[in-house]
Length: 627
Ligand code: ADP
Ligand code: MG
Image (tube, rainbow, N blue to C red):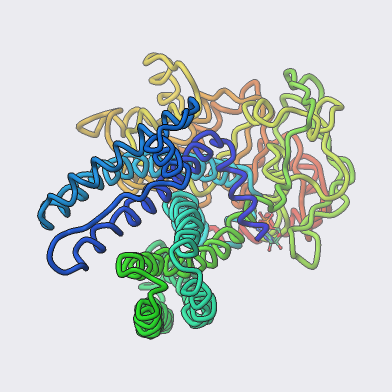
């Protein structure tokens, strides 16, 4: 129920709509009651044989006042009004007795029509207020989830599949939306409806009402037990659906690998399992959903039969008029709908609680990187970026990816990190723009801990070029300018020239306006890489990080990209991670890493002289390289 309260918290921002909606709903049920009870005279009029003899009764006071006047007594002021009302009533009654039965019925119908019209207006208002409030609340929630996604640990996106994540923002939120808009409206309207109509029943006939209290639980019994099953089935179905989504996503993005390794059969088998499971669970859910209402119908028809018999008995005893009985019965029948709906509502609540639990779980999950409450805006790096006994352990990992790391990167210098795969190089550079924060030790920017700096301004000063370049499905121009504002055409062409990208870009028919396709599929690896270098250049970062930027390229493209990169090194602090050692020899200092630690450092020639790990790596590559 905590979930529901939290969810209502979002609606509470739009409380005036909610309150107006509640008030209107109350009037809707009052008007509905009025329209029902005003039918009583019609039934009574129809019921009698021959002429219609409907009469408006005088109140006791009115009859006394009337009698007093007949007897010629002195009348008080109030009594004069009462006599006036009594006169009108008597005249109306006289008029009514002159009417044939069908005209009398028609007359009553004319009275009921405005009531229905008013009810419609109030209902429209209630629906508008409550539903719009609900959707606004959901809009806020979805936005909050989206922003949360932006600051979740990167790790989250590796561990949890993107499909599942999308299902939170799209499907789960939609379930919640239904609950706090249309379902909430139903609940409020039904609540008042049930309340007022039970009261009407009590006034119409208390004997019958007592009977209702005894028999109605018969309807609710099966409903609640069924609600349980439906909830379970729906939850399973939701979970299976996101599993299917996740699997499809994985298969589609990994299609090359799957084909290359002839894994189609295995993947198809996995898909079969998930798909089969999903259809079983979905069937179950739908089955219960469709059987539920019929079960309720059965129980209510049993109730109806009992009441018909009891009502006939009371009329026989003259404790009830036919009109009262008919309306009692009608009201009772009309009451089954809101009760039924309330039964269904409990299902909605159950599945919304499940969806809400998942949504709020995500909203509540810890963001490991958080902006300091009073962040310092970093100045230009003037001295050094320093790692002080830095350690990092991935969430859930047994051993640390980095341990007791000490290194100093001087402003304007170029350093390189080398070491076998898994040594911790990427982890180390992810720490610099605070994609992750160290779990031990600290990193300082001219002496200020990175954690005290404003994240956005820090990141503006740093560019990372990775092995996997991410391009958005837009034009080359948009991709180069991504993340930098107010770029002139001249400046953009300048950086693409520096990145050795102009030639190939202009070879396309549309030049800079060429659309690159989803994730840049239209371009070769080297071309994508050069676009990302142009992007980094335009951003003009103080610190440039190249994480295996050229590893995925063939020798020829690598040579071109390498040239492009060298124009980036000037006047910058550069961290290069490279697999091919030929590209790191220009570095001022090279750090050799192993098992999350720096084991050697020095210039290329110093490290060769040292005859350690670096020399071994170097010799290994030298042997690999064909002469
Ligand atoms: P390198 O870039 O030197 O190849 P990484 O920094 O990527 O090495 O990885 C260092 C260690 O951290 C490896 O043992 C790797 O398995 C582990 N690791 C990397 N990323 C994650 C992650 N997202 N979750 C858990 N462990 C990770
Ligand atoms: Mg790496």
